[in-house]
Length: 169
View (cartoon, helix red, strand yellow):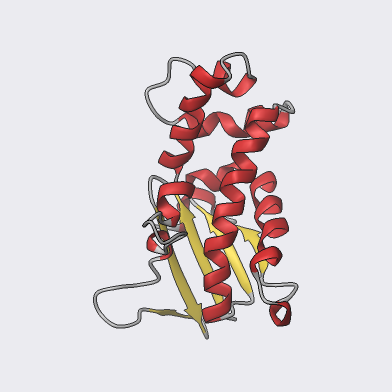
């Protein structure tokens, strides 16, 4: 207590639970983690960490690294390429590892703001992209402390949503 939930789907959403109650804040917002800026140019978490953002990264591999396993698995797709990230990671694909690390680092940076402002005990990763599973959880957990002030170390525990994609409904 408190717990912060982030859903990584077509977009990026979030929610904060304090004392077993959803914290709503003032109208019109909730915990809009997806719209937290990652730089002064306007890049937001959603631009870099949503399922659609990962799809774009994977599509870029089709021309940059067409022989990598991730590009081969996702070739011919018209969306949803992120679903191939977990099998490519399991097979040891280096390009998949880079996509994962870049996404996890950006997400950890965004979540560092959550940690500094709300100091949750636990951050739960859910949504379709979280189906990548333990590799994503571990990468975010590994990256997050780099962005936290020393007094907040080791930082909140990072967990996967037990309900997977059903966590939002």
